[in-house]
Structures are given as C-alpha cells and as structure tokens.
Length: 100
Image 1: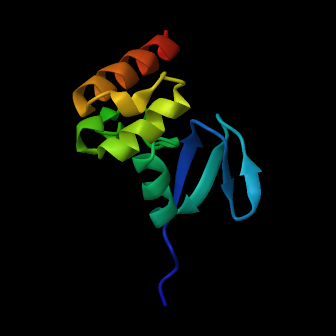
Image 2: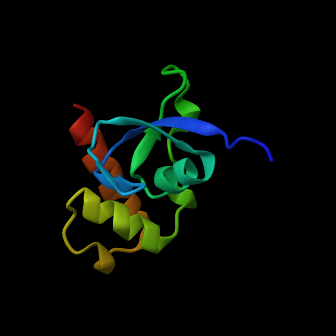
Image 3: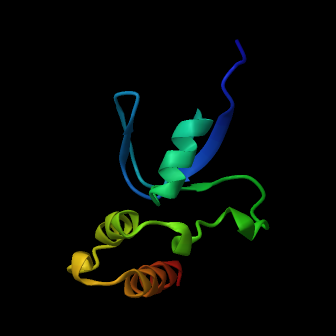
C-alpha cells in the first residue's frame, strides 16, 4: 500500500485535525484528501511556491453552500440572502481588505 501524500497548508481559520485544535495562521502537514477539503472550504492556503498564484481557490467553482460557509468565516452578514455572484464579490472584497 502506497504511503499517503502529505501536503503543507497554512490555515486561514481554526480547525480540528485528528482531535487537535489547530489555529489560524498555523502551518500543518496533512493528507492530500484532507488538504483538498480544507482548501475547497476556504480553511487554508497551499504552501508551495509563493510566486505561483494558481494555488488560489477559484470561488466561481464553489457551490453556493460552500460560499456561504466561507462568507460566515469572513463575518459577512446574512450570506444566505445573497446570490452566488454577490457572495463571490463580498468574499473577495473582505479577503482583499484583510490583505491590505
């Protein structure tokens, strides 16, 4: 049986991994499947080549339910009332504001 591939991600929110609470900003090595799940849910960013911007999550490929979950993490008010395009705009604006 092949050894599972480990991926290093930087958490963007607190999560529980294997029964351990991991804080936002922490770098963790996780199995590839868990890394994909965390990245798709907006809970982390992939750490590889910092100059490679293709690692960013494409919000347009996420479902509305996934976008609502991300919006709640960004403390966007009443995300259920927004349509998908408005959710993407609101999340992008919050994310860009936090980067500044």
